[in-house]
Image 1 (cartoon, rainbow, N blue to C red):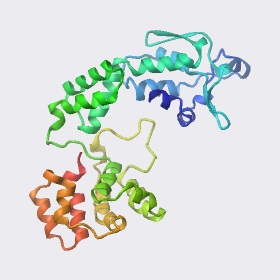
Image 2: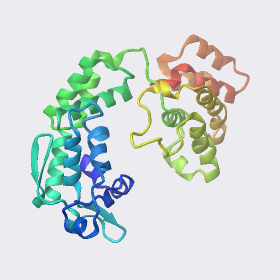
Image 3: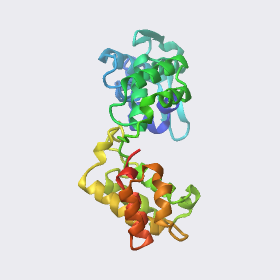
Image 4: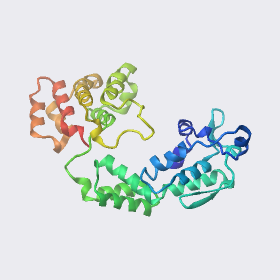
Amino acid sequence: MLDAVMTDSLMLMYLQQIQSTGPDSPRGQRLGRGLNENLARELLELHTLGVDGHYTQADVRALAELLTGLTYNGKQGFFYNDSMAEPGAETVLGVTYDAADGLSNIRAAIADIALHPDTARHLCLKIATYFIGSAPDAEMVAAMAGRYLETRGQLQPVYAAMFAHAAAWSRDLRQIKSPLLFVTSGLRALGVSGAQMMLSDRRAFRRVVIEPLRVMGQPWQLPLGPDGWPDDGAAWVTPQGVAGRINWAMTAPQIMVARELPDPRVFVQTALGNLATQEVIFAASAAESKFEGVGVVLAAPAFQRS
């Protein structure tokens, strides 16, 4: 997975890897071009070891030199260009790679970094934060990281270790859904299928997805930086964001549900199950219309959490 991300054409262009040239490479000598460290830095800082991982600027520089040669153009797609590659061996995180082996050594380095202990800790913390909530149980994260290393990066055993831990089953739902997760889980609760979404016209899609996500603080495919959206769900709790969720709950069901809206007294159990409080059950059953009752359920505090 990491190899696919690091050699994807969009990643190479977004992080300007296609401009990175070994200073002592044939092209670097001829054109006077040099390194771009963006891909190397984000590989270590965001995708693997984490910002607090055990690496140095020397590792970033050496990795940037090793990655030279990874490039892309519209005709060939992704390819390795020897004329851009920095000659000589590079030592990254204590492991030396012979640049003469070109792409195979880059892939070996990516595989080694993917299985670094700091990578295991960083990824498992992010997984636990996403599924469980901010500041997840340290013992649970350690157990997940242990399984990651034991299975050489297999994710299914990591999930199994997480769900086998008692901390994963607390009824105290601490994580606030991101706007996108709120919208998708709301549509799923309403029985709106992916096929139905694909068949919806552009105007309906904008009204139900694009514009509401912007109001809630997560504009479609426009993260604020290369580190993506916040892990801490509390970042979504803003006056505008909450107002956007309530407005979506009261309007989207009528736009997307082609059939008659569900009975709110039934829908409260469909959407919330045993998390439905007596207050929400009463409000849903006492609503003056189906769309108001369904909206009350989707706007309920328990539905905002995962």
